[in-house]
Image (cartoon, rainbow, N blue to C red; front, side, top):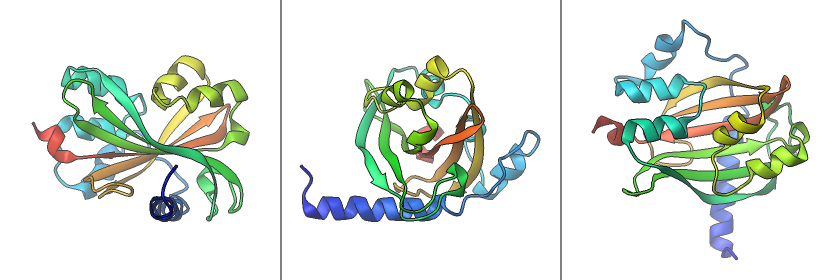
Length: 196
């Protein structure tokens, strides 16, 4: 059981995240505009630039590039009440969503390559798929690739700094299932790890 202080910190983190997500742009980053979207972030390692605009699974790309298995370590997940409207998911303040925070860690080195925060709109996700998505040991991208063939991902924000961590850059993308916005995922990356 979490202490009252930890619960308060989690609530503050969630509030900050919901506030940021409530202000997401309505349009995604389209092909042909990746360099323009990346420019405000300044110079970045090539592989990290590619990850930030990719619409595929980050986990497999990290494994291939760094040569080690990536494991998912769940820091926190639970159903929570939104305290802001989230137009990107067609959700209103007061509705329930599923909030999940994970780290993508190198199995041998323990290096944290990325931290991800996800919001799931359970109304837009079937029960079986939802249960798979909240499995604490599997990345959402892997599950979507294997179980949600009709999913569509679109990167809708790139920004410097972290929202939930002290990492250097982050991206937020939306996953739609059968054309219905269902999941928001923010992935944060430490640039120094990608410089090596």
